[in-house]
Length: 454
Image (cartoon, rainbow, N blue to C red):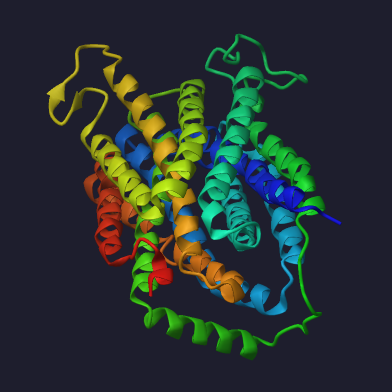
């Protein structure tokens, strides 16, 4: 019999297992490596350096747009089906297995651009699978404790996941990801005979993510079982659609619930965009190398691990709404700095020649992005709990998964349009600020105690 404590740790281990897909893949190692390879490939095809950089970012954001659309259309059906059947474990097996296989395939992206589109497809297919599993994992939270402890549990799980991200990033930077001279952060050649000239140390990020995910999913599967009071029949598509329709009608009739889901659509979409493009921005705008971006990632992940835990404590004391609002304001400030800063100036104020000031500023931005982003998501999960009834908690979190991805295509699509229209990587980030502001405005109609206040 699995104890309550083991169930909590099993649930938290999913965050630990999945985090490197985001930390190493989406943000700090693979994404900038992909951007560099794509940019070089476009220049080899005759594009100017500026146009090639914009095309590389547009290619990445276009793929993310497609992935967001897939998640948006599949999430409501998946959530309703899993809730109606009471079975989540088979879905976890399928999604985690897909993510592991796709991550391993990232190895095939060569520095000369060979495998460019294959790697792009594999990464985003794996991302869809990983996020689908994460959405289902959120639905387990209401079964782990009382409402009063939700903030601490949610923040603690996010913090635990980020510590996994920090450790995995340290391992990659110290032993695998090589710089232009072919050595790692501590001056070593990549191990196991990996060829630095072929960037095999950096390319090992794919197999590394796969091994990490597979290994640390074991405690999750061992300690987090499906809890079904009675054996349920496999629901028909008609049953699933009818249940989903009833749920959506219920949301429309609940103003605080409706406003929260709409607000979270906007600010979570913007937050995902910041994570996805941070490393790309550092490479294409500031000219950072993989190791510099990795150090930036360590700072961001450390801040996220610490501030997610602190945010969980603040959530438990003051409630999730003040925590959500404070974090959104922090991210609006960061987004404004990203739009207004280049290698040469900040909001038109020039830096000195060869100044390191923009690097320092972006390191600070990274800490804020990591800390505020982790705390924001943790508080959002507990705000969702405040809109749940105990008997419909899994169904509500299925809808929360839908809200988190229903407009997942919006930020990447807008970034693509703004980047192409302006031919500027910085101005391409303007939609991120607008999405954060939209979420902040909608929060005005969210009651701090959710539907429990009614």
